[in-house]
Image 1 (cartoon, rainbow, N blue to C red):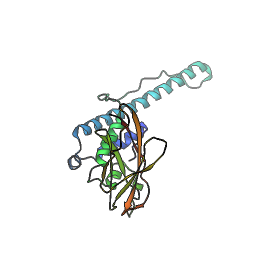
Image 2 (tube, one colour):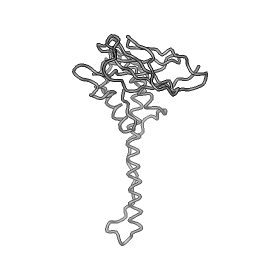
Image 3 (tube, rainbow, N blue to C red):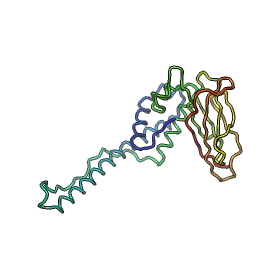
Image 4 (cartoon, rainbow, N blue to C red):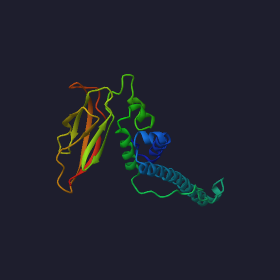
Length: 228
């Protein structure tokens, strides 16, 4: 999936997504109500914080202009006008840090559901429109999350046999074949790092037609795994 990183782009993506998650979709996709509620609260506070930042940035520029004109004095044709504080909407409830990570977690729940399709992800703004072609996507749409310490990789099979999964374990060997999966979910049962040690594991998938790799590689997905 493609989750935006800049505050403005992330806010626009979240606004589009939550505007299209209906009550029926929540039920059909078995979405966690607490995650939905938190996501909407995150969106409200993120929207407000972007507005506040823009307002105070403008206020700061006004002070710079005021100081310049004040110092120039008679050489300036414009009067030095004292800046006024920006007027902001009422601040919503403050949310904890980690808005993007929580949104990614919810997006993974949607993408990993058996009823999800590339068209749904595009409609929600979680994948670009180029993901879809007349013959279906040429690259798997994949997500990853942890369950009991091990990565669970989810992808949309479409009409393909399954996917070949490549993994970069962070050992310097780059991406190597890990396993094949004919199901839309795959659990990486690899030995975890030593207790307390955190390692970044990265994955790429490519569709299988029979035992033959076809199409393009998915975007790289990654997750930090910690030894238990």
